[in-house]
Length: 115
Image (tube, rainbow, N blue to C red):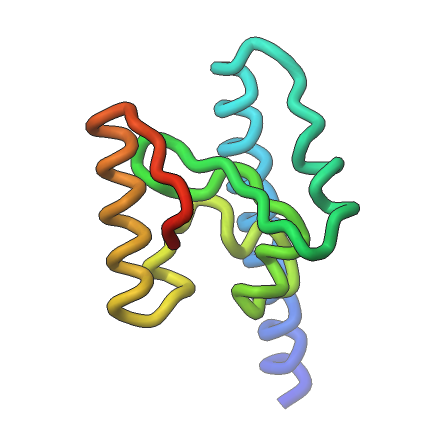
């Protein structure tokens, strides 16, 4: 039983390391494409009533603030990185958010005052 318990702990730690690496890789790739450092994530972590995020061309999160992490009932930013709204919001809301993301990417036009 002790071996099984230790195996579970190691597996959980390994999953956390993989998730952190995924977050780091996705964020680093995105910021490298920007060609500059981006401090808005840290800035928006200090404003608890504002949700901030950046998404890639597939609609997956590449940067998020702590407010979004809490609203998605997650504990770490790396739980959101590389995933999309359908992974966190129930239907039909998650589907509507992803459809809006794809429309913005496809059409290049922003959407205002809509969730």
